[in-house]
Image (cartoon, rainbow, N blue to C red; front, side, top):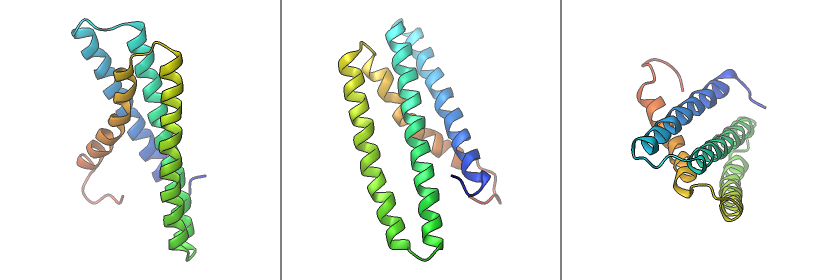
Length: 133
């Protein structure tokens, strides 16, 4: 699935970042007096979906990079673009289905999707100079 360990390490770092930011989110809800089971379950649900989405992105980009190295960069680009649309629609469908059928807190479940981007920015900011991407 992965060609080298760098992709796995990157996924683990981002997942840890998302988990920490989700814990911070839950702490904020608690400080505001809004913490409940629906908030907890919503945040955990959002964390799992956002990490699964990032894993799918990591796998897709890894496979596309392999295709590009084999001499087909156009097809690799098309695969990544097609995957982004499919992943977006899948995440949207999962959220609509779950939020329509459960009482999970919508904001608590959507925030972890943003936490992936924040974790990526933080990982890049704190990356040691001289290390390869």
